[in-house]
Length: 471
Image (cartoon, rainbow, N blue to C red):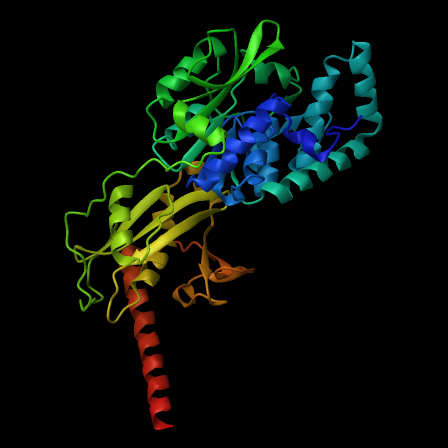
């Protein structure tokens, strides 16, 4: 008996075909309407991430989380994270074997099947799993490869749903689809091995559908993010605004998909593009913009400070022609001697990296201030301010992507390395750059290093110009 019967089986979850069809149109229209962040807490077998990546969202726009071991092993395999930190132990298996995702998933299936081996049906399953162990592991590995190829670039964290929600609900560009357990202790009962398999399980709050959905919407109803939740309830007991319903899922329960914003979610589900929830009014910081001819010195004071999205949008619109904003989780401003010199935005997009969404700077007569923003964003000490202790161990590099008419971007030359170049019919090229984070470099040291490089660049330009004039 195969662990996964076909490549799509991994994504079936508990949603029926009609629910998935309903969500496909909603997700597709949301991606077309300016939603740039797709969030799946309680990821399970990544059913929603699968729908998202096939209907308009890029893998790097997708973030997922869960607290059960199967999802975590699969999530780590997709995102390239080592299983060593999970400290998995299983009866009858060497710890070293369990560093392989396929073997770890097989071990869990084998051991939770063994507890029911007294039943003839499960005994047949258990016998087949035992006798064809390697066949099953190879089958699981093939399925992991399918999922990895589809979703590679998304992020996954072992994280309680409630904690994940806290970090995303204030983002008007985020679409959140949650599928918490439909009955109390659902995950715990399904994955129970009677203690034969253990791992470094995270702390989390068990979800009780009797009270959990109300708690969920108490938290989400006024959120800037658009939130959807799947639930199974009796007639009249669904929590939130119902945008989809199907009768007779089990016993006297019906399937519901509910939302925190009924009209918007319904419009998206009907294929109607919507105007994305408006940003707050653009507003400048309480300090002046750096003059274009300002002399920057080695002893100039450089600072990176957190700013609100509305403040970032103000400067991006000010310095960019035909500005169209993209969202970032963290918006920061670069101050030089108290003047605003640039703004940039980052998100935690993948297991091993932070992603720079945008860099905008003062048009300066002498210096390339965008390069200073990238160099500051590359500092380990700065990146650590965005991460929790577990993420700090995993994140080792910075990434960015850009559309350009040219096959190379000179603004990041010498700072980041080009790792992917794709021709784009409309814009020329899509370039992806990355760089390792730099430890032990302060903001002031970064400024000094940047000035050294800028002066070197200016000297080389002068030599080229003089040579051309001589010819």
